[in-house]
Amino acid sequence: MDCLFCKIIAGEIPSEKLYEDELVYVFKDINPEAPVHFLVIPKEHINSTDELDEAHKELVGHVFLVAKKVAHDEGLTNGYRIVNNCKEDGGQTVNHLHFHVLGGRSMQWPPG
Ligand code: 5GP
Ligand code: ZN
Image (tube, rainbow, N blue to C red; front, side, top):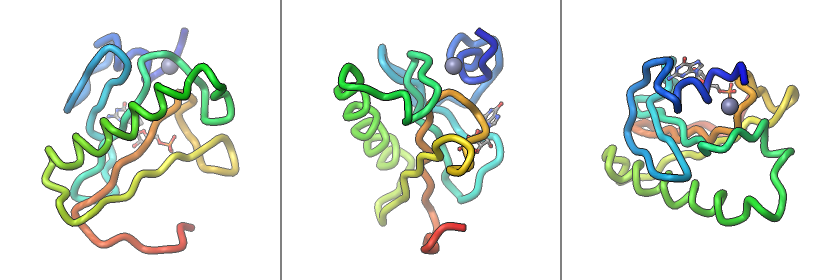
């Protein structure tokens, strides 16, 4: 499959890995929007949140626990933001499900 993030998981494209286990891969975003900005992605290729189903319940729960763990490892003791952009209107640019974790500064609301 011609997917950028599948290639990152496979090590075919280099990345700054922060964590990995049998279900997820975590790496720094190449274009950080905050002092800390990393992505949590399932190793299974899923296009977007819109393709999630009952079979992915445990995986998504695991994604959030890993996001919290790595956020703490990266020193985000004062909070952080988890973002998922879904499909065109959500602003998704890479079609492999991913969750942004941003922190190290105060975030604005609402998003653009
Ligand atoms: P989206 O816009 O789909 O929610 O987020 C995609 C994210 O992937 C963007 O924040 C972008 O900077 C990041 N990204 C795109 N290509 C690469 C890459 O080759 N390596 C890394 N580490 N991040 C990437
Ligand atoms: Zn993929």
